[in-house]
Image (tube, rainbow, N blue to C red; front, side, top):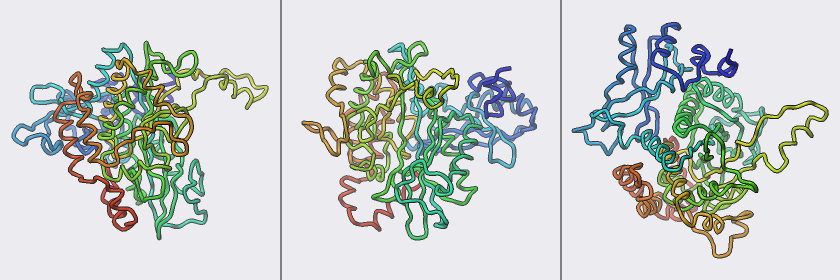
Length: 498
């Protein structure tokens, strides 16, 4: 018996006794027949970053086989604004490995994520999932290495102010019930996301807690395990859907918006990444980070200002990227440094792997291998991010760093030790954009780094630039300073981003 499959929370994995990566069309039909499931829903990501839905009721085995074999037609012009209505028909084709049982539907149904294809049967050049796939494929073919990613998904739960145990303002980090009112909701989300195929590291309450009038706001975070880039993006999208469905069920409001109000902690969507060769994490060298890791960091820092075009896509994104809020404002990196744009988290190195023996004296222990845990973290993105394009951009930046002749010198110059808000390095540091408009200008200046190797199509870059400039939000923070009513109006406008 395969214990890892037997203990898997995904019911399809348990029933089929195989990992989801090995799912076939016949597997899905077999599961649906055995469990008398007649409904299947196609899910796919449109321009707005949300999962769309197309519902089928299978009238026969042959009908279900046809649905899973050929996909279906959709109107691309209603999903992507840069597609012309005159030639917009697209196919959505299921990816079997993504199938999961809908945990919310009263009518039992299978959900399955899809990819877009054009009228010639070619992967749609500008589809988010295809751009990400192309980025990773090129990285692997050109470097002989691969990358893995994980996201840290932060969100606020907003509810009526009512409790015998009020939480302390901005001190909610790792708080527990009864002071954390929505711990049970978070644990239910962890369970359901795992059932839908997500690979979760942990969940916890985050620092952001505050009250305003009769409303209470409580921040939480769910962090995932490092996986292949495409899967990392898929599980974040499914997780956001699960959390929103739970919020609807519990009649509370949930928001992934970067900023709920000025002066309180914002919500980020940090991305951790690692580079592998022959299946082994190569982020560590003999004495700390490897040269490969430092080159990757240098590439990310070189493209970081333009990466905000995909990771920080609404005006309130730039109300979060301000000093003294544990959000980055300057382009630099550091160890365990939350004021840096790229942070190197603690790794299990230098003898600390012996901690478990000290904590459990006299107990015989065979500890798990922790060599593969080292990542680097990009801290700028937030819940408005186009997840696929952000990860694709980070892969392009990593490849750029590996190819830059002066990568190691740049990494050394941009390293900071300590809080940059208290001790700015000599000569200062370049700043991240302060508005969507400025982000668009930075992307425009570096668009070739994204368009290289035919990864990002020109029209996607052009559309992104035009969309960001249309916000017309230059110096927005200055214009709104002290105008709390206008700030609140802006926050509400983008409360349900992506």
